[in-house]
Length: 331
Image (cartoon, rainbow, N blue to C red; front, top):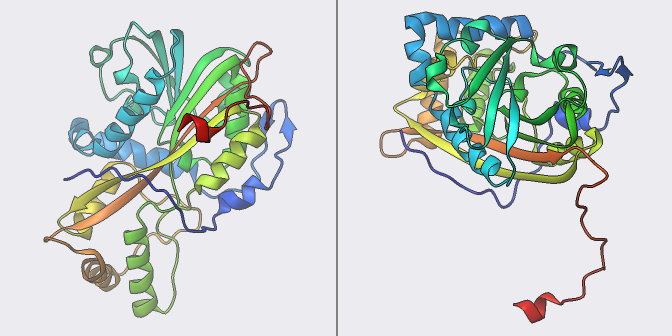
């Protein structure tokens, strides 16, 4: 499998439920954002993650860690760019600790891992970590039910937030849980993720069954993330987009790996079964449209975000027009 890092300089317009959510202002009851509507079945997602780890003693799930491990490597680079030592870090939706395993004791003393799935969060032993580890089996959507406000120096999230029903609400909860001048670093799958699989399934289903249904979860657009972070109250925002491309022998191996990652479809109202001939047609379409050198690609678009909780002593960007040096002179 080959990883190719591609910087997306221009992104096509994309409509998603996150665009609608970005225009909403979540109400607050006891400090927790109310879910505007349910997209995902969180109970089913927990069961999918449990099953992915339960088979073969977790060995198969370790084999398919490659996407999350790659994204965690890129996230830790952003974390190390912050020239500050943290006494503790909260890893939200940590899984078995893809990001937490990369933390070193000279930058932080402790990591608190939080995940929906008990089997997933306990998959790997403490010996795999360089820092002290605490594990909390909690639904990420209920962050403020267990984490006090203004208590965290840093919160990170590596490829978990694309399964929450209320992304604006969880961003608000993250900001509230941070101390003033605390930092949030996150990575979330973007709207172009698995576009090859999505279009192949849609074309095959339309041709064989006369209609389409969702098989890949709705995901965020980079422009939505900037808007949502700003509305949640973060400052000094940084949002950038990257891609991880993985090549597979065929669509079937991709589907197997997604299942073993716990990334099965968890949309409410989803179809539980697809006809075999529809899947065969989708595999043929996938190869026809995308095959190269005997393999087919799968694109994972990743949106990285960094935001800080406002604080009185925090450095602030200069006002527009306050510059005194022309870029022409510098260049």
